[in-house]
Length: 597
Ligand code: ASP
Ligand code: MG
Image 1 (tube, helix red, strand yellow):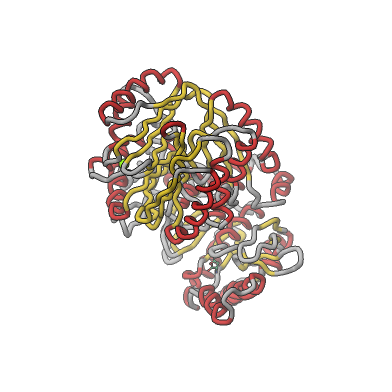
Image 2 (cartoon, helix red, strand yellow):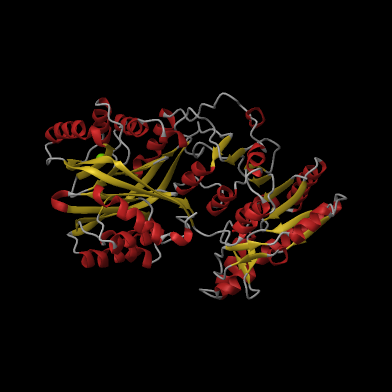
């Protein structure tokens, strides 16, 4: 029999009417012939109220007690939901995380799921009951109650769907799906019918959060189709699954992170271990770095730029001061008035020219690009905060994100439930049970080495609108398909721009770059005829902080110098000298052996 997991967020169970409405949805799904597991959050803003209450008593409440307190919000909801189902004449049983057997580690307030036992759930389902599971909570080895972090009910829902090998996980919420961008900023934004896990992960990481990111990592890892939809209507929403919405559209969404700050270390000695030293200083202060970009600068000196949330800037600068001294950098500068605009799409991995189009339209609008970082399926640019919304609208328009693909409904697209059916054949029970151990562990899916590329770098280019557009227009006109692009801020008013391309194109690339350097009146371009690009990709790379640090430390220990860096949600790309690619890959494989797929 098919199993459906239905999750209702706080706004969807905010009062008794809404609880009854949710109960009716579950009963209807059961009548349609499914076994139904509901996962519910605390009512309305109850979790916030509990947090406030704790703070009135203690400035920094013990984390264990915090979890004991916060878990009660969900306990209220599940009991009321079970009563609601009963009042409709159907059988239900409510269960806490501990009663279900959701085992977690002991990191109170942000615990990770280790395993889930499904016996009790299955038995209740087989007895014809609707099972109502408390979201966001579990229990550790010592029988202490834990919680999974704010918004964690999404993760509970997807995890239960994975453990039960459910056919579908429905997330009922106060938005009706995933949009191409924030409709409050871009009125033309459109709800997408379908989006792939990777696109959703990247979009969430660049500011378009609809769900707890860990829940998407989970869904991807266990191939759970997730349907995000409104709890206040019966309209279909957005299906998150393995396939993208359209195979012709290179971009599926755009997003904005408004309050960022950029920090750049200038004149950094370009030798092994420098990146590792900087990142470990910042990580030690518990600051998450967002965009990370390293560029080969002038006279063998590198620049390392990164962004953080603006609120984290004061703490970050303390770490940067230490790092500057430690690595012997010339100095640092920062800008706390910047925003990040990104476009995401699986299609850009195969369709060239997406970055160039983005740079071009921004140039036409006179919007200056301060920093660029690209990955296989994402391009991010940093711009002045004043220009950010305009930049977002501009890219949304140029990639025609408001235009729906040919088939206009999920049913017509034949996607609902199709995802699971396809995967069911692959996964046998033993395999699933084996994977349930350490459900939320970091997984490195691959360490790819590409030795076919060369690098060109323009240094000391006057930083003004249209710079990147001009460079990549010339490069594209020369028939060169660039792969990785990194732009960072150099000394006052100057930028550094590096890109990689196939080795046979290097000569052409250099000629073009020399022409550009003459025009810009800047230094001679530098290049490397044979670089090695290493792409470390995986799941949970960002939520498991410290992956980047481990990676850079590993390269440093091997004495391997890093030329270029760019990071994304699922990938860290580094460029090293072509002669050291194999050594780097072997070292990284050893370093990450414990978490390799
Ligand atoms: N009630 C918890 C929170 O507000 C968990 C959740 O809603 O997902 O964060
Ligand atoms: Mg610029």
